[in-house]
Every structure is written in C-alpha cells, then in structure tokens.
Length: 162
Image (tube, rainbow, N blue to C red; front, side):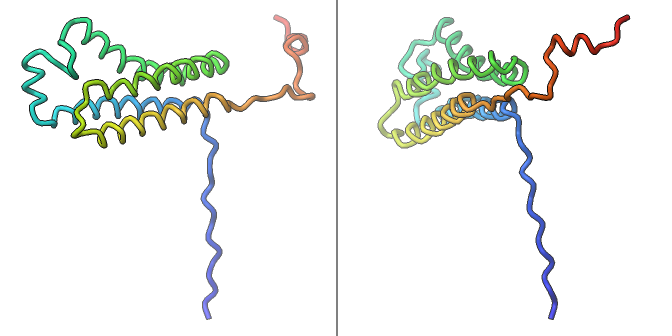
C-alpha cells in the first residue's frame, strides 16, 4: 500500500497595508472606468452624448473636470497609499474613502429603472471596496516600542563620531 505524502501548506505571506490599499484603489478606479464604459452600451446613450448630455447633465467643461477629478482621486490614492508615512496614509485613506461612498452612490443619478440591477450591483461592489479600504486603514497594525530597542537619543550616542 502506498503511503500518501503529507501535502505542504501554502504559506500566507503578510501583505503590507499600503499594498492592500493601493490594490483596492486600483480595483475601484478600474471599476469606475468600466462602469462608465458599459453605460455606453445602453440603447440611445451615444445619441444623447452626441446631443450634449451625459447622465441627464449637459456636457460642459465643468462636468468634464468633475469627471476627471472623480477618476483622478483613486489614481492618486494608489500612489499615495504606497508613499505616504503610515499616520498620514491612514488618515488620508479614511477621509477619502468616507467621502467617496456618497460619490459612488450618486452615480445612480439619472439612471434608468431598466438598468436598476446593473447600477445596484456596480455601486454595491464599489461600496464594498471602499468598506475594505476603510477597514484596512482603521485596523492598521500598530507596533509598540520594544524594550530592547534603543531610543533615538541612545542610538545617536552609539553611532561612530566623524
């Protein structure tokens, strides 16, 4: 009889919070872009756009600037999540994600009831991603100073003097 070799367990590497946040903002950014793209598939939408209307709003420089800001913020949050110091990073993610929940819900403005399920589904996924961002930032691991770790003043004294 053949004995089965024990299977090895897959190792779960700890992913830095910054990487989780950047991945979540990337996912959100792509969803926003693709949802807007799929909106064009609705019958008559391209004709409305050609007529100067998007989501019941007249197309203008102001509207296009608002659309740019809506997508630029998640793009910037990808970079900021990877580069800001932890304390500022946490606060920035908490504030921006909190402000983005109503922005995502507002995407239903002007939506046709024929596509209510589509908008409920897409907005629901976007809000779930934002909730993940909020949870990840809120529960950011803290490190307590170690008793064996020298203070900055003690570390300065141990450095060789030039």
